[in-house]
Image (cartoon, rainbow, N blue to C red; front, side, top):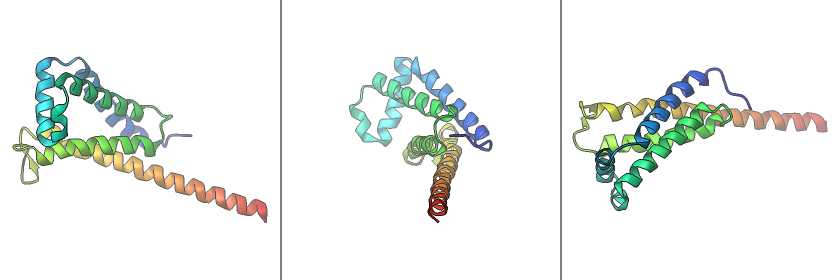
Length: 151
């Protein structure tokens, strides 16, 4: 398995950004946990039952895992892209559903830090699409090779 050279800047930028965010949250205090938990639970009510410090650790671990997957060249583009797309889509849900985050589609001052996840979603979708098309191309090539061997 090899990594496309064109994926390196995407994976480095997104991976280092998300990994840093996760590492920063890992040692977050009670106030940080309560604030992030409150915002997330307001958008995703199922999270209300989760203890804020546990939520913060889970969020941090998720960011660390996604960041590490993007930075590890052995993780296929489709896998890293799927993880990034799913994670950033969840963050965009916060942007879309939390009052005060946007004015129409434009982010407010409060919404700008979360609105940046739109570029992470774009990077994730690009990696996922490329990874899936590479997989299809490999299957076609293998099928053609088998057909040529049988002829």
